[in-house]
Amino acid sequence: MNRNMYPNPTTGKINISLTLKGTYQIYNEVGRVFTEGDISEFLDLTDYPKGMYMLLLNIENEYQYFKIIKQ
Image 1 (cartoon, rainbow, N blue to C red):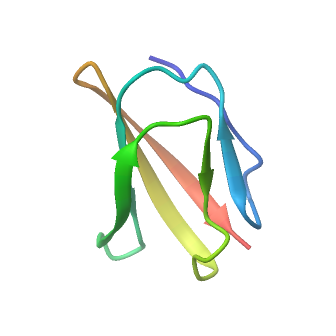
Image 2: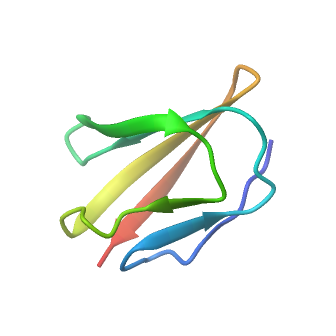
Image 3: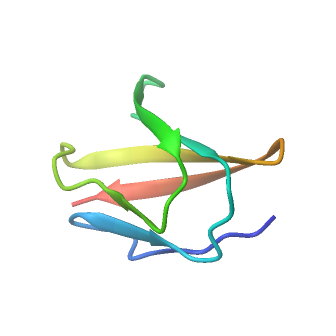
């Protein structure tokens, strides 16, 4: 599984290309889950504080992590 996300760093929305059915979780720097849900074409981080986040994608029990920088 290889997914592309852009723009990163971001000031708001993250686009996820090649979106398939699955779920996501977004964690902050200390491992607290900020949000979770079904994967869509984009994730809106506009209201998130500035910082680093980890995005976990779960597609058909395959997991992939991405580091996201929110400016």
